[in-house]
Length: 120
Image (cartoon, rainbow, N blue to C red; front, side, top):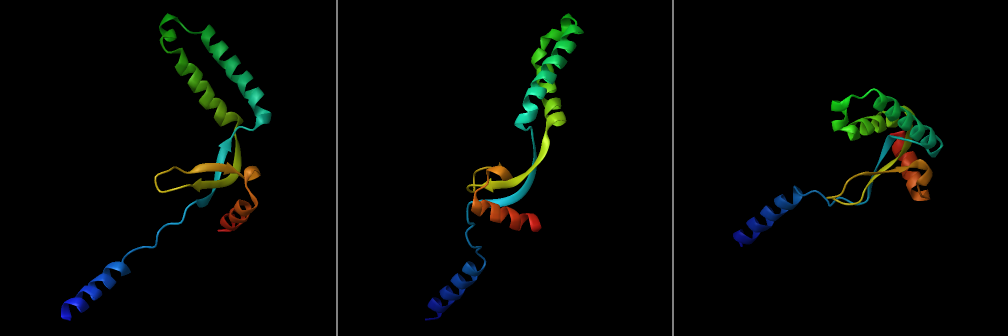
């Protein structure tokens, strides 16, 4: 009888320390920089002009890694032409990553969560 009681007490202590399972999907408010469609043509033109101007001044040794120049121009253009965009980040499961959903693409239930999380 004492064994049964001690096992029950031990199981109660073990279960008391357990956390409830996490519910998915999870959401959190986020602001992410995105290049709007209205800026994409200007951005492409800026990248082309910058790479063209830089390639005119390259010497023979600089041509080893021309893709680095293009990547740096794209990175800089993202910083110049991007606009802060509000939205939600969504986590689908335990071993997945957060992905961003802009406010304009949210469903009605997600919009309610967005407003609630934004107030916090």
